[in-house]
Image (tube, rainbow, N blue to C red; front, side):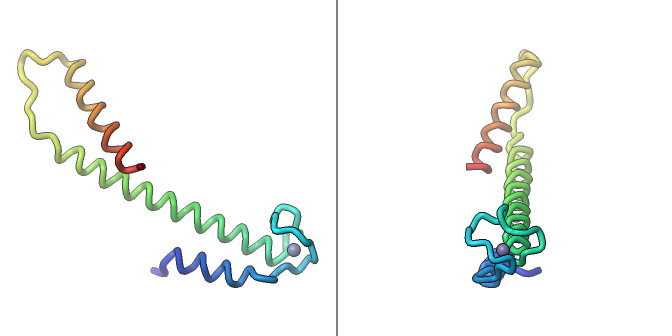
Length: 101
Ligand SMILES: [Zn+2]
């Protein structure tokens, strides 16, 4: 699989003076829909977003695995169900917060 960072930097290089609609602004929205500059800008955004999503999903699943592994205590008979649930939710929130930090 090609490194996405590399793909993005190649797309950025291709983007330099790629405008085919003669619009003089870096804002892609002002370029024609079939302008190469606009197409490349949208491609970069799509690759960058999916890269972020992929990294977040990976971090989340790692955090989830760590959270499951952290279950080393056995709830006692005296533990109230809502206390157990509260602790579990607190641990899960901490794991997710760490993964997204
Ligand atoms: Zn253009």
